[in-house]
Image 1 (tube, one colour):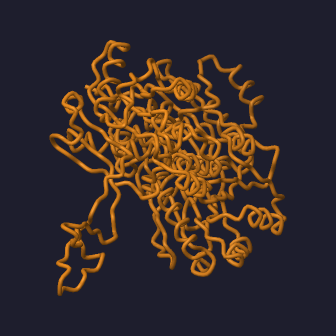
Image 2 (image 1 turned 180 degrees about the horizontal axis):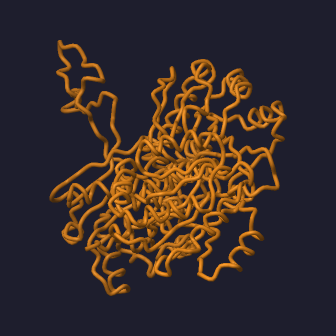
Image 3 (image 1 turned 180 degrees about the vertical axis):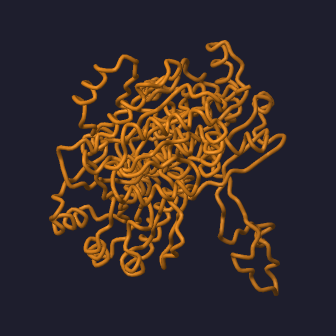
Length: 573
């Protein structure tokens, strides 16, 4: 049974030193709003309750999506009243309003603007997995802490301070500081006004995430921190090239946005393309440079002054990498396979490589490779390891998907091959934003009697994929997505580069490969579909092979690498 969770955000009007501290604009946004936004992005929270004694704070809280059904009673707003009393009052009001009993309280003080949804979700996961009664967030304290007893200094760290050498930090037992950013505890604890009772756990936060704002000096420091790292994505996509690299870059950027205050910009070669439209529709800053103008590309990069450049491109050009290195720009290079980057130059021209496919090559720079680093969307992590239903012996749904553009019109071949499937099989056709064969498809469907479902502007590709029994697709990012859900695929490569990558998936046992697009006929596709439909044991094995390889968390791992790289770049600078 899913527990009902109430998030409580205390927000008094303030004290005599800084009135209305909680709504003072921080980088143009009220301090309180950072906490409300983070809570709203947590799916496990059922209601966000701001407890305030002030109508102005109430209005601002409501404008950012929080619930403020009543003002806090004056007696609960005194400095000598415990937050536990405030939480009890919030519970009583919320339960009276919702006619439901809440099981868990998440207490989120509003003075911690850098604590994100990801930090709260991770704390919740620990609370659930460890079956805790209470959890509070901490940061590790690596200094040497002291107290004073009767006027005599006494150490709190693991060392007798008289006549003994001080223990090095690496050998000391960790000391943790309660940072006041996150508290999670059961309803039972809330009723008893005991935040620390029962089975107790700590959740470690990075220091920046735990920074609290309590003074004007804190505000100044927070303003500087909110400038964040500067990350540039060099990527591209078009009807000819495909959209896979743009899709993966956007997934990585979305995760960075969830976890940090990074300033990001995308750099592509053409303005009037589906790639440009997709990037801008997601709210990201975009710069455009002609493909052959290397100096203009470097001018844009230098003008933005990034801490890190993330290259997510079909091929990494030697001259471009050399220019980045000449300007001392730290690079994270995301590639489909290590064949996409010149190995003889990696030690001098690259800093970090992320490859979706394993390789026997061992580059001389940090390299993270394999299916666990595939840039799949969040919906894949949520559904990974299984599907929305069990394996079906009979094929009931076929998915035709050739990525964002399908430059060679392979969708039409697949549709013609699927025309003779039995009426019991639903056929879904996914068309990407750069699909350029609308007229041909419309004409073909007009000659076919059986129904097809056409899907465009997919917001949750995972939901569509998870219902399929078999797919027909190309050799791009879609292969990783299908394998993650354990969906056997009939694959046709669009070009020689895709053909090389597809060989890896054949070795993994997740696909049936028919060859390059110019060598594959409609009858070849039809025959392959018949073979797979008739052999349920083979499909089941292919499905298992894929699901064992992927957990859907590749984007999270890539972002970990990028943010660590940003810190490394800053340290070098």
